[in-house]
Image (tube, rainbow, N blue to C red; front, side):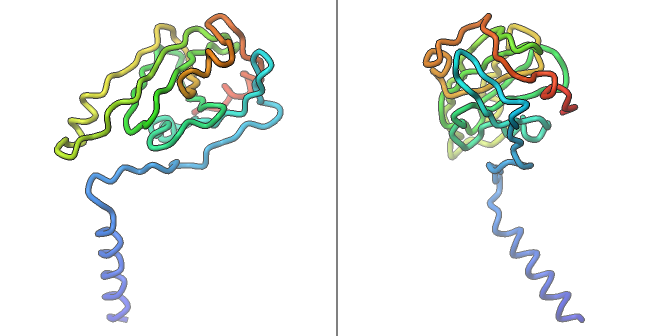
Amino acid sequence: MKQLAIALTITLLGISACRPAGHVRHEPLSPIPRLTSDTAFSIKGHGLDPDLAMTQADRTLGLQGRQPPRDGLILLFPMNTRQSIWMPNCPVDLEAWVIDEQGVILEIFQLPAEPPRAADEREWQYHARLPRHRAKHASRIIWEFKSGTAAEMDVAPGDVIDGNWARLLANPG
């Protein structure tokens, strides 16, 4: 029994030693929900099946360390307010569509990729230097895409994204 306890202790110490200091987790904290046919979206003939970030953990993770999905990522917030987002560990330029609860695009703003954390930069310094991008309009919904998507799809503020917004917004987040 004592040998089992010693082996378990050594194993646990080995596991924690494998994780580098300041390790940033890049995989989703929970499975990314997918839309179903009754919650699919479309705009100007383009069908969209985005990833969803509905929890605080998934919104915080956002698109860090990965390419944006073809149909983007919807960040669903619990409160209707002027949302503020940032771009830590995001390798590509993005754009954010601020959307109201009926699917109307209120604004589209650019989110330029930021230089990665420097070798001599502490994590708190890195996070402190990143700009926060604040929406001009209050909303619960920000939809992030690869930069240039709105232009490719000929989408602009005032356009309406068709879909079952009520079902999506029913999630408490």
